[in-house]
Length: 402
Image (cartoon, rainbow, N blue to C red; front, side, top):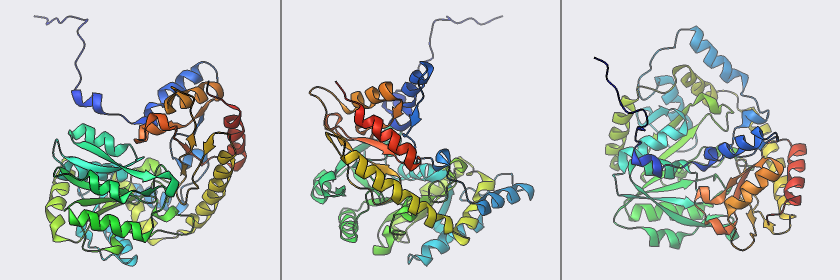
């Protein structure tokens, strides 16, 4: 006997989806509408170096290809292949942070590591301190697990440094972790050692875990930024990085996390490994590139940093010349967070969507990163060539939100 159901009855979705937002990609839907109307879109919303002509180092490609040819195409151990975990541990140790391979996990990019850690240590209804502006993956994951992001202020009038007093006041009995993104996405800021030590002291005083997002650590224009754990090896710090940015392989989804040596983190490490077992493993062949990256030639990073500094200087100079706009000079990565004076009653999203429809230039509104919609912040990715950036900034200068 056939089973019939009313054709008009939609399948309901989980309530958690309503809480889940990720502005960097969500805004692409608006860009597609503009493209459908016949206008070319310049995508300055996603930090993908490969989309702007930066090429993955050949020795990393060969490492992955060799792994495939050698038959390494099946599942790996959940925490990752031993060679990659050993390479990550050795790299941290060479930077002054003694690390054991058994406290390293290879993940599907840093994003998965962040989700594993937050899921493993934060219960529903608990709180995590995240910077404002922040990388929106943190708030998206927290929404998914039913936890609460609590924004702490970073000050654009002080080179986007964290407001330490604001952090102290934001801590409650429900606070479980402190997110530190340094070098920072979306602002390009780099924190001073004094600030980093103060952040560690606050976290230690309140029994918080620091999630140290160090994906851009090798992309500071003046040279690599030391791991945060170097300042306090026995603090409760979980560090992250990946091949995506400094090694120009974002689509490979090859990242890692190193859980600090403090015995206080042993339960967290066990929980993270348990969760990692459930997702089987990160992409196998790409794990072989981790060893090649961390033990091989890194000269491409010198070239990449020079190119980024050139673009950062151009971006800062040009945006600061636009009437009503100001931009703090980035010190690392490939993002800037300008501030635009808005007409009364208008929001940052109004500015971004207006700019997109008028010029085809796609940036991301600051409120998608946790700033106030009326403050007029937006994030721009400056990986395009200097010539193209110059043309883009000409069009931005000519645009006015009415």
